[in-house]
Image (cartoon, rainbow, N blue to C red):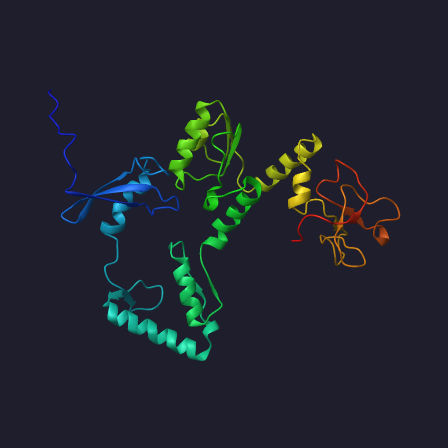
Length: 321
């Protein structure tokens, strides 16, 4: 049977617009093909530095943000009891009037009675500004529960971070751990970086209960049991400390890992940092020697207690947290 002749170079539309994809936080460059003003096709932009033309399935499906049959065209007003799922369409003017009435009543009573939370709507600066103008202090968004803590960790450990994805040194790293990395976020830069690392012989280790695509190309896949990540991380730290493979100057300078912690089960200060009479935190790389400890046989330990012993002294470096 003869295959049909297909014109593979026929234009998809009559116009192409360049923009960035908003299907995740990666911000890949995309070419959007339009026909008579409607989106017909989305492809990666080869000239964009983030994805260099690569586009994942989520990005390709961005067309459904505009044309999904499930997309709401108008506001819905509940007409039944809560939970019944009964709604009717209303016009925007009516919806805005209802919302303004509810908000006006709350603001006149006490603006702080409004708790304003948004998801990853990409406009936290605007929504935060709005909440401040309204007068409520009770507002938050997605970032503080996900991205911001990861970004802070990346800044302190790698020197930089792209949202919650970190910023691996793709050019020089010899060993990379992909720890619970989801393939629906930042996937295109990670794919490009992994290909580069594998090409120059670096080792890639994937830690994930599911052997995903990243795990399939990794040199080693660790199928960790869900909920045991913390134990695994502490075990790694323990072995590195025991083998003296830690740059101790780094945690002393940038963390409180060398601060002594009170171990007094049942005591009021159990688990808190040990302090001298002036309230200064005590530091040491081992339990304090005789005569320098806390009364009553209370034990003091630090994260690095098993390696380089030193006397107990007030901390001069590191940050209190």
